[in-house]
Image (cartoon, rainbow, N blue to C red; front, side, top):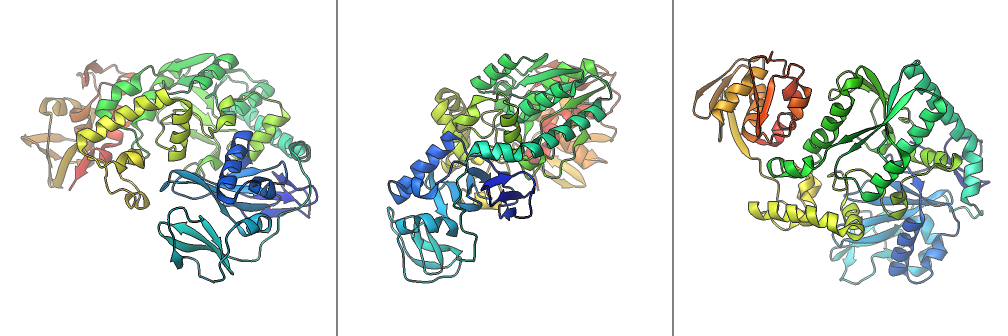
Length: 536
């Protein structure tokens, strides 16, 4: 995505509106948003801690400041103001502390506050020793060095860059300049909603977040026939529940305590093992909406939210919601467009956005960052303590190193290499198997495997204790995961149209099963069997 800037008014633009406008060099994942009072207080505290009293006032001379994401192990924001990226506000996971990393434009304003060394260095080069308590950054003759561990390492070399603009601005000016573009975007989305609904009733998914607040406003202005739906995962923050209740929803899905009841068997959810989404999101949603099939659901998803959603289309069929077409009218909206629309239309939004919570939803989501959990612990200590107690017990029973908890390694079953360098402890998989013509497994619930094998059209046979013969080994492993580890979550029961599945602590099927295999597709265990079975 691109961020444009008007040099005459010194304001960000959501679309290029003049020949003089220039592009600010932000990261590909940036998707900037306004910096709120909570963010600016954090930035001020960090700047004054690093560079002394008055550093914030030296650097931030205008009202309009944006924060955009930057690639990093945890949270890192590009601090954007006056037409340039002044630096990065980031959470150091080695010290569990926020820092500001200056860029060249910021040195024009606060360079006199940073210690200088009359040496040069290439990016990545070590240029000296460092002790705890030494300055975090040094200004060199040709760049900036950062204290990393016990060394100073060159992190930037000076290049020609645009100086910060010195023109007064404010948010009222930003809104007035961008209002025509924002209302044009509103018209495009309303037209899309009209084209999709064609006079039929739609279901508007309302999560309590800012994007769904914008979606709800668009649906209302579209004058279509719609119902609103909210899914209570059981892991929502209190303010979110209150905000949804004050807004009002026609249909509410309720996961109850499904998450906590499923934890012991499933283990902690992870970025690559999102069993939680099926148990506390998809199943309650399908249960609440299936009587409205066929239908259209509108969601507030934006493709700029994450790299995973970048290639997401604006319309798709959801395998977990058979009979429904899902569309995202905000798919091409940027974060800044969304927030400016909220200001233009004077919409109410969840107050947590202004208290240091950038993302809302399940409060212990594995997609969150360590800085998010630190903020959660500060604001909702009792909620975090319950989760931390489970993680400590889980870790202790398996003999994991303390770093597994410290660095949030539970967020992956197979961590990326950069996280493995921080902590080598990875999660154990409960089943071990080897494939060599037949499948040999460490554990097999014989009767349950035979019973559940009828859900597949592939022929399977147990030759002897813990030895399986199957024409489709992958399918056999999926059923093996269900047979050995079933938690009785009930997802499969909800989706079986033939009512062939019975649940008595664990799932079993009767003779009415036609082997369609849908229950294997929706089961969290069989869907993530590769994360549960260690195959050699």
